[in-house]
Image (tube, rainbow, N blue to C red; front, side, top):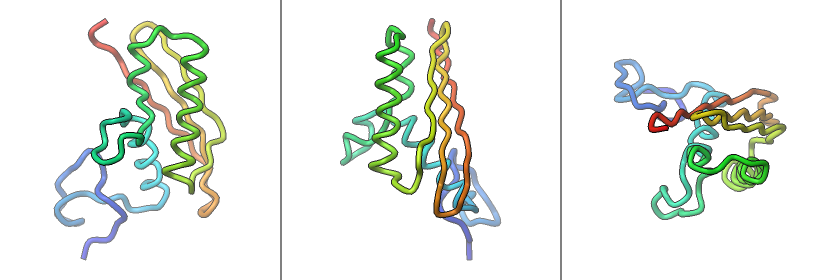
Length: 126
């Protein structure tokens, strides 16, 4: 019987876990859910058009302090709504040339884990 929390993304075949590799710890599962929430564009998820931060859309905006602040607020509000077991402690974002950077520091009180998620998305069309 496979033991894990959810399919690990991107999907990969596994002989030991069942059809797909699985996340094995609560920390790994929470991190994957946080990354999924941040990378999902609002309107992309079927039956829940509000879900998602839309981090990648930052690449197509004229970067300014208001855009960065709006992204920060969206991360905090979306995590509060969809992942209430995660406390966001810091959100830093920037755009340099054709790359958007995001650093989210968070704490999971139920398992007493602090961690950081760093993402960067490159616009190869620029």
